[in-house]
View 1 (cartoon, rainbow, N blue to C red):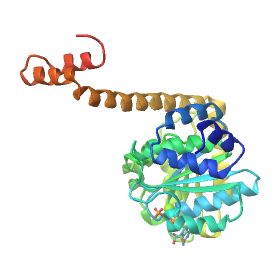
View 2: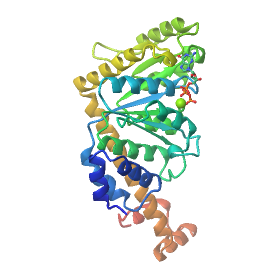
View 3: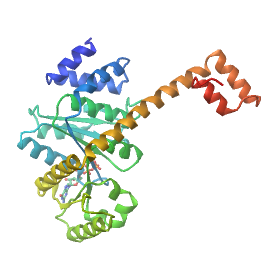
View 4: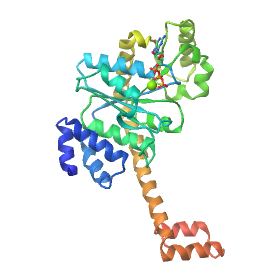
Length: 315
Ligand SMILES: Nc1nc2c(ncn2[C@@H]2O[C@H](COP(=O)(O)OP(=O)(O)OP(=O)(O)O)[C@@H](O)[C@H]2O)c(=O)[nH]1
Ligand SMILES: [Mg+2]
């Protein structure tokens, strides 16, 4: 059994086994996780984190694989995290993962990991954030987080990304869907994939119009709309260029730090909530917890005072 310190040393040396061990600890909510992630935190903060979302079957995975190849061609390393709240599987169990790995076989500059609901006790989005933090500490230049849909878990996951790429297809259609799903609010770059199909140009035009209708001034980021044909690698370079430009924009405008700030505040709040929940659950089991509960039932105490007592604020 490796100590957290040994695991961290392994991680910084690029040891893939150490990386895999830490990720299993995250999934199993291992007891020394807090200590481990705490020690790991100072090593983070350098990775470019890209979120990718869009409707099922839009070609997200295909596009992400192409982006990974392009990133490798530029000499940078890349980690892909595929998050699927509907999948009970985790780790290397997903068939698609193995197929993906084969494309990058023997290339230690690419790391691919799926996360399903198995073992994600603290919530899948929480586990995903921790995995991304670990990959950041492992010094991957770019981390791509691919999510399956636009549910709450997915939106939560996308908060940790600096740049969000939304992948659409001409059929998924009408721009109204984009508005309804709130995609305009989260997108930093649009890809209109499967542009080999008719209607692609029409959709590009509609999206550009919609972007223009968004309130903006000369300092705003205008969401670029790019046509792609992921299966043939067409338009991939342009997407990567747009992502790079958005990263520069974040840096220049100070929004990168503002995003990090909002994210970290949320993190601390999440940790506090988790702890408070545990404290409250523990209190009910004690003698004074039972007394409080009796007093509540007898209307001799109100829930507000009970909460004050349990948070240690006194009466
Ligand atoms: N014609 C065409 N097919 C494509 C293109 N890109 C992807 N596909 C195909 O679309 C199907 C779905 O692609 P995926 O990459 O798995 O899509 P996804 O968005 O990751 O799907 P989920 O993860 O299941 O939501 C596959 O059969 C791809 O080969 C494209 O540009 N043109
Ligand atoms: Mg996919």
